[in-house]
Length: 116
Image (cartoon, rainbow, N blue to C red; front, side, top):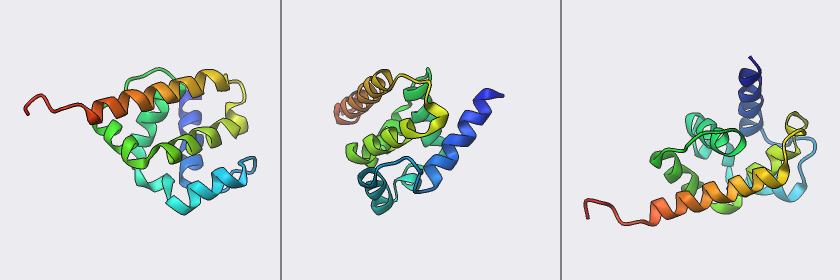
């Protein structure tokens, strides 16, 4: 049940702009680029699970994440960390997992196709 509440909060966070505690710079990046809707909800949840919990991220989701762009990805992670629902998480650990996920996805997307 707790997992459902976390996912519900995440959906609201990613589908709306203007979290009360977000900085203007982060909020501006998110609003101007429509970050909340560019990936699609299933991929948002998959990326969230990979970064904020324990899980893997599919090749297709990596493509969506890299397509979103590093600045937008970082802004969404930072905004999520500013949400009081996630106050018990270690920001350093989450940022490290976020960077690791980004780098892994970038390497995957930039690697030559096995059929080539």
